[in-house]
Image (tube, rainbow, N blue to C red; front, side):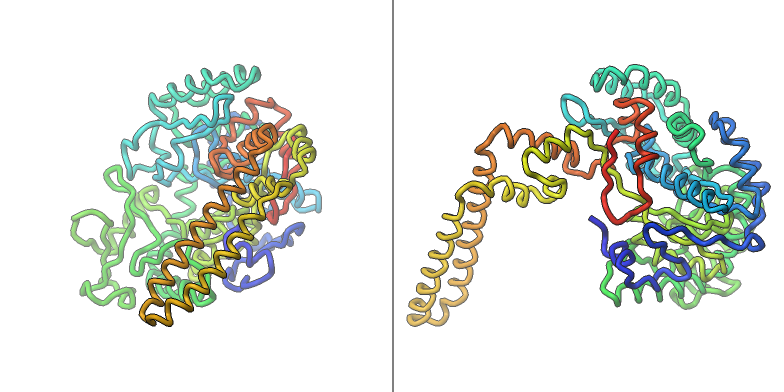
Amino acid sequence: MLAPLPRAYLAGSDRDLLEPLKFLDPGKLPPAGDPSRAPDRETLAAGLLRCNRSYGHPAADRLAERLADPATQVVVAGQQPGLFGGPLYTLSKMVAAGRWAAALEAQGHPAVAVFWVATEDHDWHEVARASFPTPQGLLRLELGEDPDPLLPVGMRTLGAGVTGALEALGEARVSDRYASWLETLQAVYRPESRFGEAFSRLAVALLGERCPLLLDSMDPAVKEAEAPWLERLVEERAAWEAASAAADREIESRGYPLQVSPQRGVSPLFELRDGERRRIEWVPPHGDGGAAALGSDDDRYVLRGTDRPPRPIRELREILAENPAAVSAGVLARPAIQDAILGSTLLVLGPGEMSYMAQAAPSYRVLGIEAPWVALRPQALVLEGHHREKLQEMGLALRDLLGTEEALEQTLAAGEEVGFVERAQGRVAEALEELRARALELDPNLERPYEKTHQSMLRALDTFGGKVTAAAARLDQVRAQRVERLREVCLPGGTLQERIVSASHWPGKYGPPFVDALWGQMELDGRRLQVIEP
């Protein structure tokens, strides 16, 4: 289920692509960092304290005080502020960060978990939808069309669509417990609420004392702390471009696909202007020197997708000095900026994020930032005890349910006689070979039409064989229906449960014990899918 690079790192291969980041093996804890190298976090901690108090975080004061202490080890995870808390994996990330911080504490190292709420992103598709399993099937809720495609989600209110989404969820009657949980969602997700605010309040409602210290990436204290590092990215634009290009070449030379499409001469920064967050592109002095010509005081920049003329780099520096909130880092620079202001010890990443960290690593080197350890977050599957019992009764393993539909059908049909198709295929293959020999004796030019006929007939037999296997798998209709229901629990809509089912579904269905189960049963091991029994 893992992409090539995370799979390689877990196997101990090609970890040098991440340098200076360090990959943390499952079951391990990162060593304590040097407090003398920690950034000054007092102003940042004070800003986060104000925000977390406003979210109702019961541990805001304690966590902010811990963050301000340079001896504290910081464990970081993050995600966009998805509707109703985003998919389950968002909640899993929060719990994993908290668990890693608790494990460091148990070893005698003061630690704090911080969750980076990525409000500067403008991906409406990512944050404006949520899915809930219901007795009628998978309920997909959306807030409608994107009204401002380039406006950061942190500057948007949820709008009237959230009321309709909550009403649809209430009408679905998922379970008796949902009524009280819906009241919580309605209190948090109001039309006038902003995405980041609603997300953070829900996180506190879900996790209480266990909630990480929440960091809104658009908070003024965060932007003030980022400003010197964003300025460095502007100054080191030529070095960053060269290091980024070299990293991309090395990744591809080892046979791995690039997770982020390379765009040479394009900065890792965005500027927010007139309500639009647009990518900054560098323009060398004569406009035709390419990326290699960057670094001159005469460099200019433009905002992608606009017809505005290029502007001098000094104007960008002035914006950073006067209004750092107008400039933000893209995906390949954000981790380094984040870790520069937090002094992170451990960065908890999902498989997709881990796949692009080799491309993000040059930002740490160019900026001279102390790079943290990186760990793959645990992957979770919520499965009730009776579901596991049914699997055992039917002689199936969880991997059977999570595999391809064809493989599952072959497993279900294993007790039926379907070998007659394979035997027929063998006879047809023999007949076709005889046909080939006779036909080529008549005319060697028949080779090509013969090959087309040969392939077409064998493909047709393969397709027919699949239909026979599927029919055999359905002979026991009761068993087939039970398997289909279990498969829908694990792969709702054909997608891994944690990637599509809303984090808000589980507390609604199981109540407060669900978070206790997730916290207590989760192992800090990203190698395999972990079953959580609520």
